[in-house]
Length: 150
Image 1 (cartoon, rainbow, N blue to C red):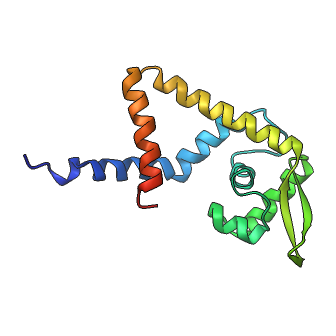
Image 2 (tube, rainbow, N blue to C red; image 1 turned 135 degrees about the horizontal axis):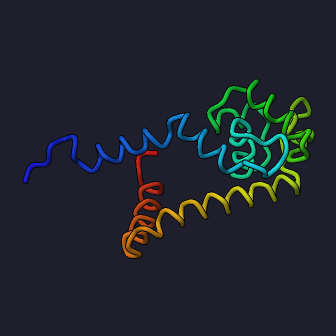
């Protein structure tokens, strides 16, 4: 049986990923996640905090490359996060001219809350699915991320 190209799994997945990574989609999700978590944390600063949680201490230029923002944007958001007590700046032991952005204990707690909120939102959506479908989706998504084109 021939499947029309627009109905092939690869096409459907590509379209779905496209919707997920749209700035508006991400910003809407981030805004819902950060609401009331910490002063200075908004949907625009979320990627900086989340990126540091994933990568560990980084300078602004390196973090910018990882999270897809420019260095000046990372520095601007980092200043707000620092004023809120979520991150701190430390000298880079490997390069005296560089400064690392580091999560504080308050920042780590904020990230844990954000991850809890995201997991709750996903779990709430998947409760509408048959359990075997939700489990298969979780396994399939993990495999796709680990083995896929990324």
